[in-house]
Image 1 (cartoon, rainbow, N blue to C red):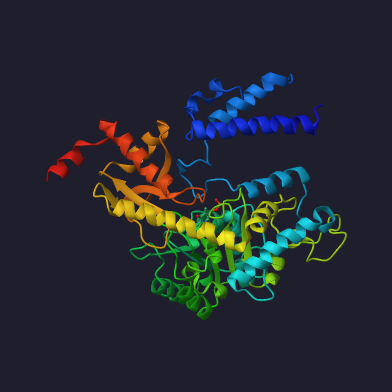
Image 2: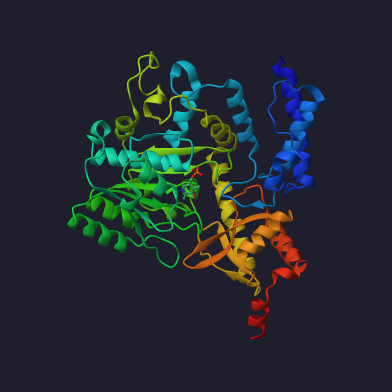
Length: 468
Ligand SMILES: *Cc1c(COP(=O)(O)O)cnc(C)c1O
């Protein structure tokens, strides 16, 4: 019908449209959701659409799709664009392997294993460690929970859960923990949410108290999820202290590093994960701090037998050649699996481990710039703490939900809000390693100019409190 060469030419043309849009309109023109289907031709019809008409629809879609690679996108825990990683991902699409067997993926298996091996070394896991690339951080957490469950109740893989398993995570941890408890048959009501200190870190003493209480009541403590970079504040749970407790009560320790676990690459910031080598499993998202395209999540396990015990199943039609070490389907959740490794490998290979370290350190420097700006300006209130790339603040007592929504609706900048212990605030995430000091200062200028031109945002309540 059409050949790949002409589509690649079209692809280049469309990418030029995208890149020019990104500089002209860093925040894309927004289409109201209730007007979406009338604004764009998204319909699928009996007759084909080709040529210029087809091209035009694609351009329209590109123009109005939110731009996540620009210097005004701060909404999520990803952003920017690492071009060598994009290159790898484009190649992965063209190669279109599936990662389950060596027969089908060949050297791509080695590429994935090399990333896993190096990552395990950085974590300090031993010679029996291994891992896999799940579909994201939520799935990484799920796989960890399944391994923990199976190691406490091995029969459950055949007969279903027969024991009263309970699991632990902090009240500031990611919401996937709740969903995963339900999927794993443990149940949302069997999660114990452990309180956090003033800076959003799990309080180890509270964890131990809860474990003792559960044992006294006939429950079986099974799994502790510690977070390296909580989703809102970017806080690091004290892994070493939690590991002492996990050891003592023989509970699986997983470290959810989806957001900030990539500090394993930074000599300066690695101390935030002190004790990480004592965990049973650890996951990090290269699509967050390391800027690879969505999604690129890695789970590592200290003992690869656990991964194998929970995720392998014989399948003669599939596993026909080579050993288990090369047939990665034996340790993955899915059967067919996208190649998420190549994009991270092309990035890593091209900048070296040192280059990844610089990306991480740069994000912390940008965070410091933002934090200093907020701290030194009396119109702002700061809610975040050191050692985080989430800068949480409010401006002139303006309701953060209203302000974030207005900024987005007027295409000023895209930034989100979050809450912690009764406070709600704007959360600026300095995760785009392409940004510079100028981009961060520009963000504040955009915000201040926007407020200056929107007097309706400044509420009477705020004015009266200022008068006092
Ligand atoms: C983003 C995040 C996740 C979820 O990762 P996905 O890849 O979005 O599924 C889990 N935990 C934490 C702490 C996160 O920040």
